Length: 127
Image (tube, rainbow, N blue to C red):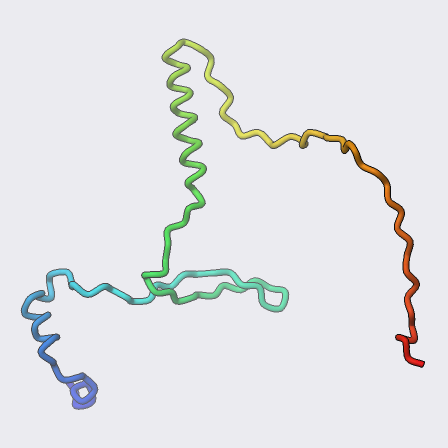
């Protein structure tokens, strides 16, 4: 151990000594781990996409919810196919379908109102 490392290390305090005595190094620490997590992202810079890495604390990282809908559909489809197989029927169509066009409607009790344009005054009222 060189002199520089010895000088840079803080002196042990009663708190850290107590933690070392109560929680040896091979046991999990009672303190939360707040080391940053690195997440790769794509960012557009001057018309090109470059890969960047952002550093985020672990407390702020959340698991992605993008697969929740897929997993729910998969469970529902498996359940429907299993019930149809039990009943001896043909399994239902499980593929997603596009939304069709919205239903039309007509307006009732509407009267037409004609609006005339007001001429624009260029002088602004000066003079």
